[in-house]
Image 1 (cartoon, rainbow, N blue to C red):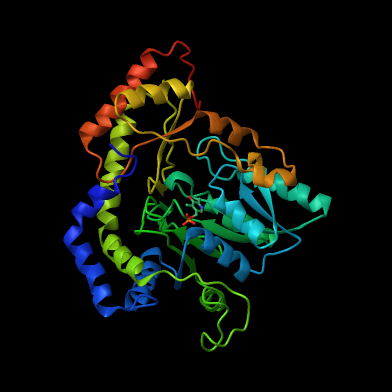
Image 2 (spheres, helix red, strand yellow):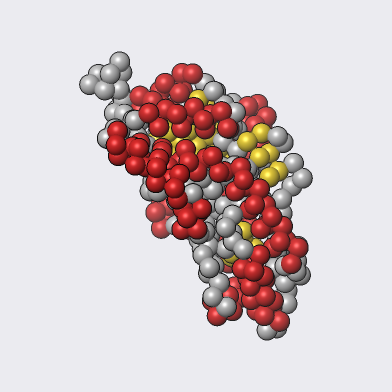
Length: 380
Ligand SMILES: *Cc1c(COP(=O)(O)O)cnc(C)c1O
């Protein structure tokens, strides 16, 4: 059993995939070949925005978004304290200062209440200019854009959606990666839409930002690539990766339907008394990048899972404010985020997980729960 089974996925689309990749080899057009433009058009169409600009990774996508929105030295960027490192790393890379915000107890996404509090204290301290918010679609659930979009707009803050774990999710009838001023995603193999290496993309409705992104991703090019009008970087998506993504995108909707059934099976069979189950609001469809439960005595539960041959992972064992790389910022770790780091446990989930495998995971968790003397209810 695997947390995310990329080999089963490849097997399911093998002929189509091999043909698509061999077509690129035959054309020998490895950089910015036809598949790149075709993929960008299809992704923009799928998400429902005017522009998609592909790039080399989800981290680069965040960096490119911040550069395009002219975020830099002296600016404060609000990020959730509970997310993958890259969300805040990109902020530091452009010379701005990340301000860590606590997360919601139930969705694990950025807490709008704490965001408002942190925003007020940054304004009062008057050391940095509050400039932007990066909201993350953690584990496949979109952040609370119903609240975030109007609030950021009214305060004059830019809003970036880090949709690296959210591609395929929906909120209020809108697709993930359509929220905020610019949205980013990652095509790292294990993400909801993954390629066979590193890759990423940005989404925006703004024509000027889209052309800035296209310039920045190729050494700040102007009219042609030997006309360099600004400092950029080399962050193109390979033609081979674009070709692989075009094949996977054709399967995404059906994969998403199946993975909802896998999640429902967990939800039905796991007892909410022994583990804290993921909460999905009514107007949301999760992309199920992870199936993350909360448990007390996590080490013992992981041991029981391991004995039953079930892999599990801890995303994330540390909050961003607790990362050594951000120690110099001297920011207080956020309370809910800290508690989550000791309770969260991610179980196998992907569209190719069988009912029998889900049942094996459920049974292993029951065994762990029965031997658990301290049956404290988590997440309530
Ligand atoms: C994976 C991830 C990234 C970075 O994406 P890469 O393609 O690995 O650079 C950024 N933010 C979040 C929330 C992620 O999960």
